[in-house]
Length: 507
Length: 122
Image 1 (cartoon, helix red, strand yellow):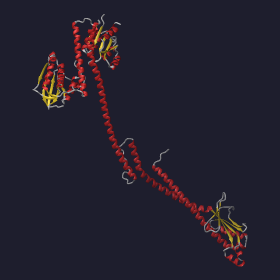
Image 2 (image 1 turned 180 degrees about the vertical axis):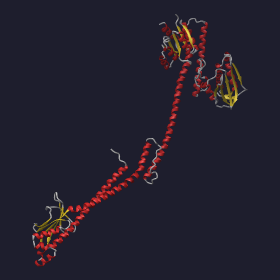
Image 3 (image 1 turned 45 degrees about the vertical axis):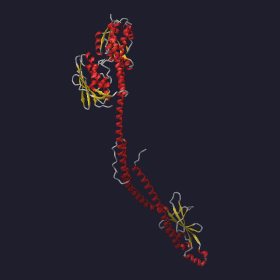
Image 4 (image 1 turned 90 degrees about the horizontal axis):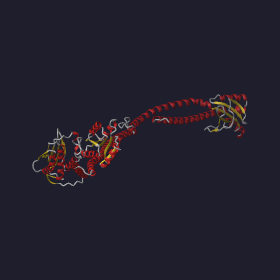
């Protein structure tokens, strides 16, 4: 079905109303006018008929000469609007006739105010319609009757002599009225056209802001939230109110949408970050598991092989036997260290580590750690150089701090070339103390400097037997628990690990 | 003619004990401490069998296995991949790389002997 705009609809309704009402009013007026005109005509014709009767009563009564009567009737018919005239005698026979009389018949009687004659409306099939007046021709009320009354008494005075029928052709008046009808309809049509033109321009003016509003709404629903209705904004009527409140609504919508988008972006960022973190955690977990299993299975394999050789060989050579027992011993130590480190790390991360904080001399901690490692250093011909300035009191877990220093120093020895030296310095630093462990080993490439503190990170130059990569991770946790920092600097050959412990730490 | 077995592992005690085990069975033994060395020795010496560790820093066992199995000259070398127990992904990747046998660490030395005889003398 074709879509009709508001303007077109209003126009159609108006046309219907104008034409309908106009036609009704005009039609009614014309019908009424026609009735009045006919009645007027009927009255006029009756008056003429009555005059004619009175004037010619003597003639009609006395001489019934057909030629004379026909002439008289012919005279009457000449009057305006009269189509035919028939003069009847008292028995209903025609005495004289002029014009083509309508076929007599039973026809409804019309009531016309102020008319004494009976009026019938005759509509013969196929022919023109007539109003027919039938006026009695009697002596009653005439001057002649008064004479007759005086001569012959009352009975003679009211003698009915016959009747006069006068036909008025309906079409005559209608022809006269046709011009009037055409003029009226033409005038009316002109008025309707004018009204419609006015109406149409008014409607367009009223509807234009609504059309613009609909356009803006369509653009907004298509996603253009900046679209506003511009037409009719200043109008002080309902349409103006509508346009203004629409614009306010659009403004609010745009604001809400912008807020929403920002929120969605924010949430998406958060979710993406959480997802990345979870993926990273998952990756770390699998990596952790596979590293742990590898780190546990390597020494176990060596132990199992060595034990198998010893068991299956009935008389092993003494050297071989000693060698495999050494392997079993060394690899068992390696397993024990690894398990100890794993447990430490698990306890720290679970918050289940038992810390024993107390007054601690940091110088003593460094000295004790170095002493434990003297033998290891000597084995590799590495010189340990310790420098410190007297007692350095802090509040700390001495055993754990010693573990940190031992980790750093044993790493330094491990990576030192034979005959090299490892320097351990304890010095005051911002609000506390700093321990530096410096080696002259191969150094650490920049990309590894942060990662060496991750669990199981063994560096790209790792060789088996150099440790599982847990020592620095544990050290970082211990230092952090003391409120300090741990980091590495490695410029040129060798690297220096630092950690700080705040003075008066009271955790 | 002595059969030659190339043993490759970056864990030096595993390398040492496995080499000893293989030698005990009467085979000639070559050792490599990393993937690159194993690849070089396998191509140069054409051993009959290669006992190959997976996790090595320079070149992992899968890569060595794939390279040897993709070259006509070295395709005939039996390869036993030494996987880590409980790492199902290792097994899958191991078979995909073309290994003839997989052996999970820690293994029973007797199991290793059985496999060697099966592949070299059976």
